[in-house]
Image 1: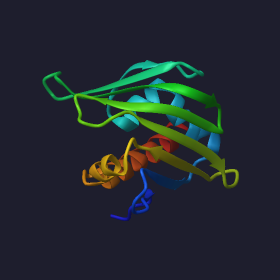
Image 2: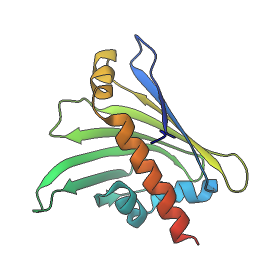
Image 3: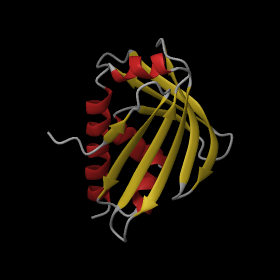
Length: 156
């Protein structure tokens, strides 16, 4: 399977950059990050809170078949500019990772295509490298594939 979502991590740095081009107008790509129903579907999670505004907070919980929460993530928005950018914190519950800072930029390539660039800053290079040892690339690529397919289907 081709990994359309690209991850660039320079040695010795505490950040990484993720890029992905989508066959979606920028407004629809952004909607996939601000509409709770769409987020829940492409991320396969429960959206507990999604306050799309500066200083708003968000929380997602993912459960197993028995209803036990196996993954929880939350954070605060520091900037929320529709169809342009989101700056937020990201923290995983019950995980040995510190809070990370995420800068998401949404760019229109033409009327039907857009690009997402995410810069993620970790507390240390060691924490970033620990994250990269997980099946992070494949999982993010699969989630982005679901996002694109879902939004295309919802708007056809």
